[in-house]
Amino acid sequence: MRIDIITVSPELIKSPFEHSIIKRAIDKKLVSIHFHNLRDYAVNNYGKIDDAPFGGGAGMVLMIEPIEKCIGRLKAKRGYDEVIYMTPDATILHQQTANELSLKENIIILCGHYKGIDQRVRELYITKEISIGDYVLSGGELAAAVLCDSIIRLIPGVLGDETSALTDSFQDGLLAPPVYTRPSNYHNHKVPDVLLSGNFKKIDEWRHQKALERTQAIRPDLLKGN
Image (cartoon, rainbow, N blue to C red):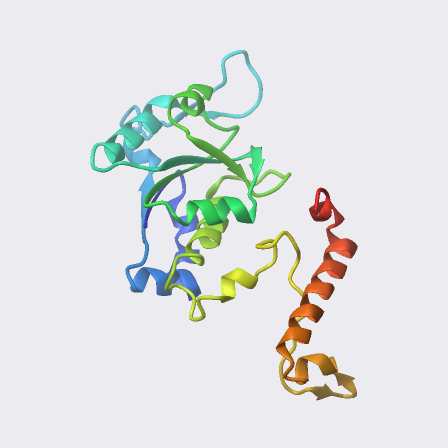
């Protein structure tokens, strides 16, 4: 998989890709990440990429021309499955979206900034808009890193245990059940006996029941329609 990230602040987003699981995926050549500084496509020699909104109002808007130039140059070299815009006024990121995107080959992610981007970019070039929550960040860079992490960990060969991602929260519409490890008895706080029983049928039943209980207590909205 190849992911191209268009950003006003490439230095802000690079760090998450230099550590842990994402770095291992890059080192294994399972994914390649490419950062593109929007200022390299500025409309003048002073690096201008934004302007005041028509109709007045506070803030600045990213202009269509630099974004079109950058996307156009990328598309001239290869085809892209999705051109994604990270913005708070979009559909919230869900596990199913990450699952679907992990199957793609080439993706462009455009990071919003300031008051957003010229609406014509959204209408002409963007194929999917994603938000990571009902709140506003200074830019889309951190949101793009979250999206990439959620996608990359699902690519076969990235995680040490291929089944690990399949038991994450939300994969089956439920939160994950509690997990325990050694010691089995810590200051008289004991691991549930069923997990030490070796009876995998009963363990699966226990985990499913606990997942239901946690979901009902914390995220009952996930159970609607089930």
